Length: 149
Length: 85
Image (tube, rainbow over all chains, first blue to last red; front, side, top):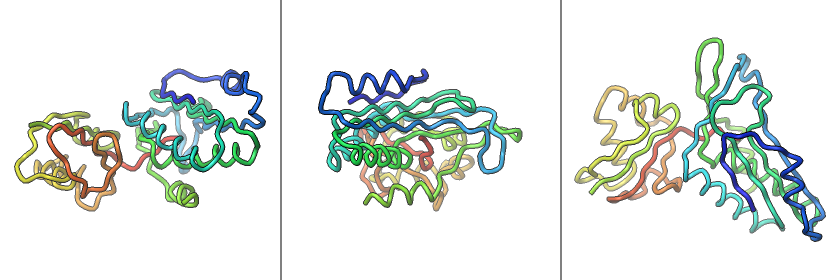
C-alpha cells in the first residue's frame, strides 16, 4: 500500500506495473486519474494552486484506505495526490487498486475517490481572468460520498 | 499551557496567518469556544470565523464537530470544506 502527497508528477504506467508485480493473486487493476480542467463554473482557469494540511492529509488518506479495505478485497493500492502549482491538463490525483476480481477493484477505486473528495484536507485555488478564487465544495460530491453509507 | 491553532485556504488568507500558538484562555473548553474567542478579536477574525459560516475543524488532525473538547497541547485547525481530488 502506497500513499504519497507530493509536488512531482506521476506516471500511471509505472504505478500500475509496480502494484501488480510479482503477485499472482492480482487479477484486476482499476485506476483513476483526476486532471486540471481549463474551465470551471463557466470561467476560464489559467492555473491552480493546491494547498493541503501536511500530516493530516496522509493520516486522512490512510483512514480512507483502511475503510475501503474493510469493504473490499484490496491486494494492493496506490494513492498519489499532488499539491502546489498546477496548470490545465496537469495530473492532480491517482488511485490504483489491485484486487482478485474487477468488481472489488472498480468499486474500491470509486469509493476511494468519493471519500477523498470530501474527507482529505486539500483546497484548490483557481487563477481566473478576474483574479484568484477558492473553489467551493459541491453538494454533488457530498452526495457521491453519502451513497456508500 | 498552550495550544497550536492552524488556518487553511480562504480562512488562512482572511486572518493573515497560517499558524499561531496561544495560551488556552480560561473557560475555553471546546472547538466552538475557541472559535468564539478568536472571533472576538473582531475585523477579519470575526468575518473569517463568523457564526453560521460553513467551516470544518480538526483536533490533532482528526475532523471533529465544534462541540469537541480542546485541551492544552492540542493542535486545532479551522478550514473550509475540502475541495481536493
